[in-house]
Each structure stands twice: as structure tokens, then as C-alpha cells.
Amino acid sequence: MPSAPAGPVFGLVLAAGAGRRFGGPKALARTPAGTPWLALAVRALRAGGCAEVVVVLGAGAEEARGLVPAGATAVTAGGWASGVAASLRTGLTALESSGAVAAVVVPVDTPDLPVAAVARIVRRAGADALVQATYAGAPGHPVLLGRAHWSPLAASVRGDVGARPYLIAQGAESVECSDLWTGVDRDTR
Image 1 (cartoon, rainbow, N blue to C red):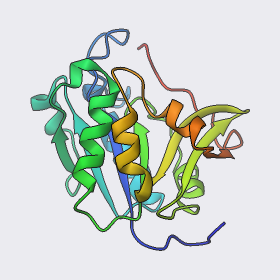
Image 2 (cartoon, one colour; image 1 turned 120 degrees about the vertical axis):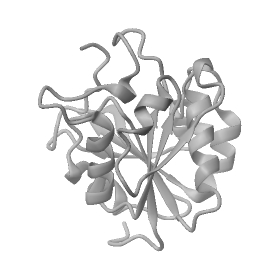
Image 3 (tube, helix red, strand yellow; image 1 turned 30 degrees about the horizontal axis):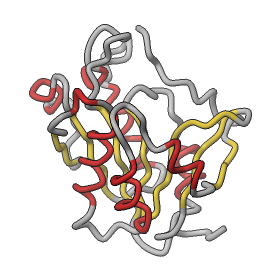
């Protein structure tokens, strides 16, 4: 396991969904104190070692754009309503012109994500790396995608099925993070 990445690692926040079970776009969600979940995701990624962060918007994009913290780049996924695949492809495409060696992917609905979980994953970064946080053995986020995986992964995702089948097929490294938090995403208010 490398102690430092071989190049910059970028963060990727997936926040394009309509949030039907949640009752609206999660990109617009806030904590009880009023902090946007988008700001929490960007903050965790930056503090965990990501040099830059790209936020993928879709449902509620116009309103959500105003919640994206300064310094993060917002992109809108055309076809976001077809599922997470469109969001992931849009984000990876946005990173193609960057000098990033890897991307750390988190969904916006993990507002409790600790910086330590991101940092634990970032330490394994490399162009060929494929890493997934696990919680008591169950797969979760963050997920690290080395640059060599971006194109094949983008080509493999369909509809509302994300990276999980690709991660399994490619033998992604599992990194246990249950000592840091539960890993639970929020599907309801």
C-alpha cells in the first residue's frame, strides 16, 4: 500500500438523482443546522486528500448549483433521470482532462462521511487502483477509481446500476472502515 498517491487525487460527488424516496433532490438537502450536504461532501473529500472536487448535478441543478462550495466544479448530467450510470459517466468524463491519477467517489447522501474514511481510501491511490470502503464487510463509500479504470467503468455502467458489478468483476480491494462510522447513506428524511 503506497503511503502517498503517485499524483493528484480528485473527488467526485454524485448528486444528480431526483431522490424519490427522499422526497426531493438530495443535492438540495441540508443538515438540521442548515449546512448543505453538498458542502459536507466537498469538505470531507478535500480534507481527506482530494486536490479538486467535481460535483455532478441533475435534478434541481439550477438551485443546487448555488450550494456547491467555491472552488468545487459543478457539472450537470444530461440524462440524469435514467439513473446513476449517467451521473458517474458525466463525472468521469469531466475528470478526463485533469491530471488526476485517481478519483474518490461519494454520493451526496452520506453527510456523516468522516474525513478519516476518505483519507484511508486516498492512501491507496494509483492509476491502477480500485478500492472500496466496507462496513462490517458490506460494500459502501467512498470508492477509489484509478485512472486506468475510468473508461472501462464508464462503458460498463447502465441505468440505475452503478460501479458495483465492475468493482466485483475487477476484484476491487476492500478497506474496512466500520471503525470510523456506519457507512449508511440516507434514503429518507
